[in-house]
Length: 421
Image 1 (cartoon, one colour):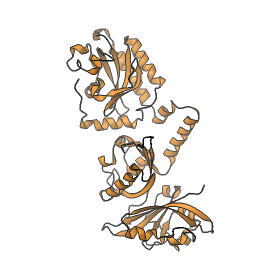
Image 2: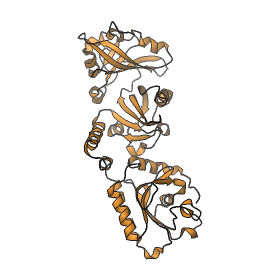
Image 3: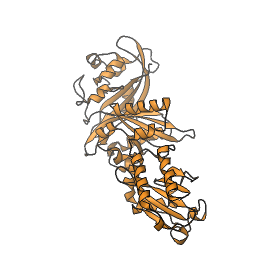
Image 4: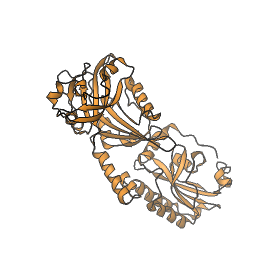
């Protein structure tokens, strides 16, 4: 069988499939029940719920099939996806499209095939419920309306909320922890976005949709370079930040950059990124927690005021946020930043960044000067500071130099988190 090219109009279908979060999940009885019933009703040795990914077909449920997946170029089911309706092949040996297929001349020795489309909640054909026999069959003696009914049952299960689907194969503490984590992601004032090992979107929270305007279906499975998302002037900065994670020179970082919203407007964001790697050293997950900052490229002029009316979400965030002038003095600080440092907003407005350093800190350098004279626009440092009440505190702070439209330095964004338990 000839390999089937993946067409450009596949993009939306693949996004719908990835958005379901069902690929590579464990076997589930609610799907296995369907394939067992299909095999029994049609008296075939093999019944599958097959999902057609970019380069493979993966079996969510497999009755009588030893393989967990095959290459898409070998797949009978990919023809169903392209036809978008039932495909029946009474005898593969008599069909020139399939007679030479490795799955026909070798195991599992397919002679008969019938595949019914299985659709996502958006109507995209994401796979099939298919029947396979090792002998030719007479289609006239088979009631394929039953196969369509069983495919509808599979669609109903697939369409259940992703959180419910994932929790169905977890139990005990793992199940409870998963539900708690899902609630945290949806309730946090920060937008949560997860990227897979190829830096494609694998999770897009409700807050991300609210902030940027795109739904999960719009972006799941897409690389950020595949749609107008990162501002052109900041693309190099973002690529460098991701590169430091991929080459493991950093396990986490913060990147301040501008992003486009779906409506074409531009917002300024702080991206708090962290990466997870497998035993072979390959990145398997990159999590971004995104804070909206401000659309203004200019620093605030009045001490203690924000550069623009920040969202309530910013004031609720666990990470402190502040703005510094090019002289290193505080121009604005969030409530959380004031809490971390133990200063009131007005007190902090009388200080510079250097004033909060502990007098015995081992590195009392000038990070503002390093930003203004060095090659990079971002610095992440762990520092020993002195709080307003005299107590010591260790913090991780990231300073990001912001530039105006003319490219000249305008102000500095500082994010800070306490390293104390």
